[in-house]
Image: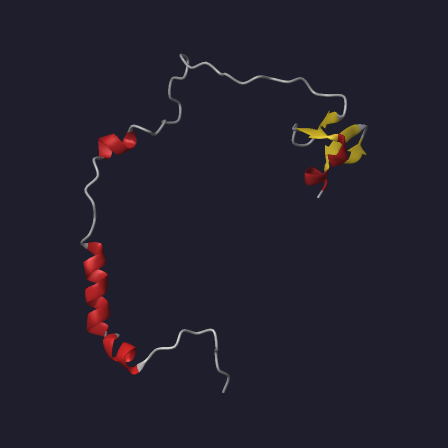
Length: 99
């Protein structure tokens, strides 16, 4: 019979302590330690889909495509020339889309 040397070893004391009643009691003790959380306070950080974002402003600087970059014709992302896998019909395709 094979021996699993990675399995934790239990002593005789551990085997006696692992009765089914004791394990059930441990499980019940863990479930009673729930913390009351105010649902409205927790929900304040969530943005709902379709929320009105007309008052928000973007603060992202848009950089034009550089000379050594291309736009993939499949995923429409801008990649460096080192990511060019092939051209299909004269349109560049990146390595991720070609895979």
